[in-house]
Image (cartoon, rainbow, N blue to C red; front, top):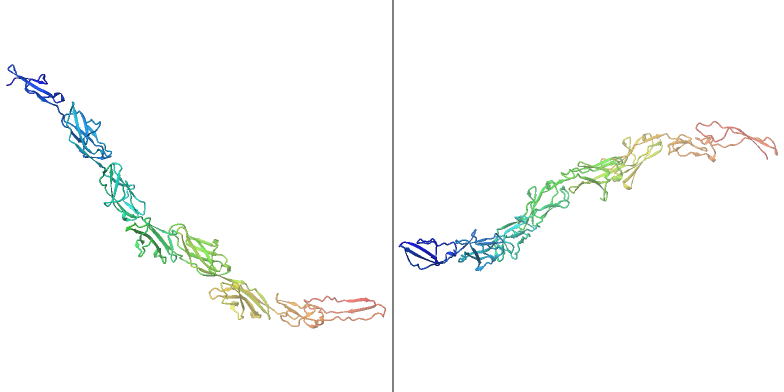
Length: 611
């Protein structure tokens, strides 16, 4: 029946426990033991019950991880395992693959992640109040390697054929190890380093690259793909002299298309239009006219990859717009040869030079002081032409910025002139005079004639050709009143430019009178000298000697009777042995005017002579 009760543990009364039930404390191991009880009913105590033995246990712990991870990443965030028992806290023991992990007595355990050796099965036990639990269920961890990433220093998405090689780098946060590289899913043989240098000789390296990293025997998963395309370096167009001009009708301009990626097939365009058949690396620009001027571009295709178009290379057509013209000029006159040319769109202004060419086409640079150059016009100015200026001339225009030279057509400069002018002359009425002239040109004249008062005369001159295309002409004029006038010689060369001498005045002088002779050098009449006479008028150049060398009493004698001899008239004054006195008297008539006396004086002359 019911009564009061007494409870005993290990024979010792449990104080205050009189109810029929007893709640065993479980806070620690001290409640373990042998429990008995007695019942007192109506003051009668029962005997002691059979003992009820209890032992203390600790609840089997469990291992947890905050993220419930089943693997750890080598080199990644460390995992922390926690050993938990519902029995409370105490001391712990950790085991990996059944082996105690030395020194680990805390409820948590940080799993090392430096390598693969931390992979395994983890267990723990908890000891609370000297009572050890049973072992927890195992918590298994595997090691993983962080999925690598592929990078390139410049984050390039393409590589340039023939350019700087790209280097791909495979990086895992798990650290370094050995690597495998793949292109389009196919392993790249022999590539086990963390970096891979992409071949750039052709287009075959274009594709999708991946890599894996193996660290401490653990292989990563495959990286995300890194895609590369192949490109060809944009070509540049060059010209040997860097000219941007070409001369219409001149030498063709060779443009060269060059890419650092190498050689391939080419496409040339002018002003955006393809140039048919132009597939080589060099294009010879036709220079026949100005249709070749324009903006040139090129593209190159190498290993099936095409480049972008080059920067434009602009060519401008230029030409001598006005060539020098042939000119014939008289010696001593000024002459100007000119050529015209276009001014360049950019750069320094052009400079010009002139060259002369002799009969053997030998070139000589003309003195620059004779050349002016301004605003697209170059002039060669000769202030006083000489025969040495006879030559062919051409102007050369240099565009210094563009490196282009234009050369004009040759123009012939001919210098003609009179080298000997006829001399004004006075002639005797019945004598002849001679006029002389000499002309010079680039050839011998077709004819040389003489004009009197602007009309060609009938007399035929004597013409002689000499060296250096010098022609002399002499004409004889048999004098008469019709021959007076103004004379000139005229040389004709078969064109519109004749060579005419200066005017020479020919005047008429009267013949000499009797008692005179002619002096042609001065065209004058001189009286006959003493002892000579002239009986006829005319242009004789001497007088007649008196017979027997007789003298004349005066110059200008006009008759032989003017020649005389002196015979004295004398008488004997005294006889033989005595002095004789002789007296002679000579009477001379008054001489004509403008004559010279013979030296006698009218006088009586006495001389005493002794035997």
